[in-house]
Length: 448
Image 1 (cartoon, helix red, strand yellow):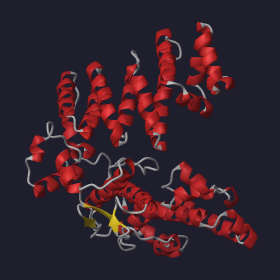
Image 2 (cartoon, rainbow, N blue to C red):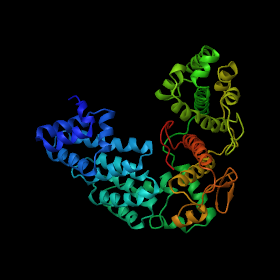
Image 3 (cartoon, rainbow, N blue to C red):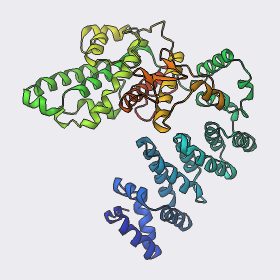
Image 4 (cartoon, helix red, strand yellow):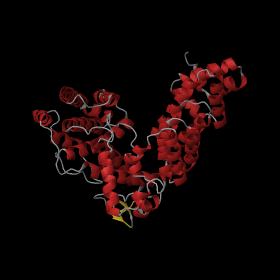
């Protein structure tokens, strides 16, 4: 069934669904199940009671309900990637409250809730508890446990373990889950908390080393990825199209871009998502400033990969990496670059797991500063939450907190903190891939 464009207006939707016949309501549900971006936006704008009526009716009518709730769960995930935490929690609450929803919807909702900003996790706890109480699918217990551990609800963690065992959940893997190993609760992981600080740090590192779910990338794959990211960052760093046109440089820049794309297609074609290739190969006159800004941060991930291969020094915590300089060190577009690809090798002094811990710590603190502004003693916080001590590596710590631009992060200018968060996200993304925590390059949300 084709979606009716009129339903993209919430007023028309209300009139159609709440005042007309059951047949019309079924048609509305079918429209949302196959709807476009306008329908998704409308669904987010509906009042909570109206969404609940829509979902509940669809389930009772048993017509279009499955497609609708799956669509809504995906909406919640999309909203999470946009940082729309209120929409995430509201949609997840709605879906979890509807009886008869497919287990994969519960899984999607729990995945969203585990990623929710800290202030909303307390509300997420009750939803996770409800899911566990009615769950029969083993995997749901593992996802609910993630929420319980992150919230610090020991009772819910114990409930997850107890009920999960009853329904055949393989909860032994919880102890080797790299995320849960860093968020261990007191009740579920008391033996970890009994360790000394050095023992706990070593144990967490060993968990990360043993629990990687995918093979680590080869040195050649890392070099190909670094080459692609540096080219993307170079393209994003070009002046906006108007100065290029006025100065007469657009044709020259376009020719160089095309040459780099051809070289990458010949020698580094195994890496790159469709979205990355589409951005890199698009004509410069179609450039969008917002995407250029987002893509320009790719250079920070590329710098980490180049460091892992010994092609540059460790990138400075807050310093700037120049795309042109990195492209030259990697040999992008040259015969020397082809030779480097054929003999790609690791920097023996680069410790991927240690760097991953440090990247996570810096990324987490910058996100925490945005979500919950104010000073924080990170060591005290870690001990209170039952976490292994944070390892900030070369970053400065004063008064127990991360220093940004010479000041504790709570006192630093917002622009400086925002910049460090963007930088830290890309380095964390690179670190996870280098450790094998992400089987494929993750071009989207990176969880702290």
